[in-house]
Length: 403
Image (cartoon, rainbow, N blue to C red; front, side, top):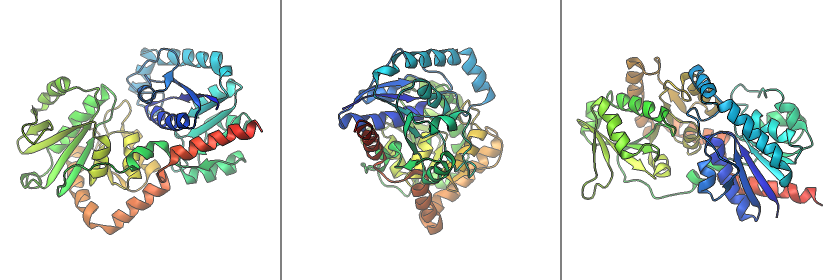
């Protein structure tokens, strides 16, 4: 089989690239990865070699960040690091039969400059944002090039739109990042209502987001909590360990309570408010929850793909800002909700708590909402098996090229 290089530029793109890469490995290809932003842990966990010494930045990438985030990128040297990574690509590209791009305009331009055959999964772009996708210059010209053997979109609307714009076939075959969450797993213990809390994955923003989530939970009505009708489950990444978590939550009066007896999970406790800490249970939290309160990117998309309603809690960034949240609602549709009020202020927290109670009840009693969740999940994220279909399509491109 062929030698392929995966080229991506962000946490979500790395995740998709690693999932796609595992399928390509199963088809017999040789694989290496060049993450342009971040450590690329998803590739390492998938057993895919990373070229060079990767480095992570607090903003997670050159994307939808706040002004503060962009200034942080400059101060941390992210632009110069990116240029060095691009230089590395141009040095080694001739060793590969196909470059597999997962991302946006930056890796698109880099792949075009390499003069190598390219297949691209445009996970970062969607026509759902504005109805018609406005590709940044010179992305459109690159995608029209014969160097790009295959172009694959993240949804059907984008495939139709770009097929007309680029005057070449653009296909929607599914999203690899949906495959793990669409695979049934053991559910969390049953309860009347389950509320999943998703604070994101990158420090230090993760810490700020978590404090906002705790502040919002304090506004949930006592009567809902007193009857033990609701389970609050916090999906937390290893980056925030128990010791750091304990120091963080005490700032707002919360305490960590280690698991005792049959209750093996650590809890965050404030009066009658109990939040169960779920580590290594992210998919179970997504699949078991009636409603997700999210301050994340890819995780929100996965929740929508699972036909779950999502309630956003905008933070102060650098990634999950009000602007990011608003763009995310355009991308993912009417089953993603957001309460009124400025991020971080008491009014927004109160309104979010009120909307939480309403959506929890509607998630179980409102057939229109349930039907809408199913519809939006299919339209915007697709069905399981996207990774396998993409990997096979890329393999076919190489076969056809050598015939």
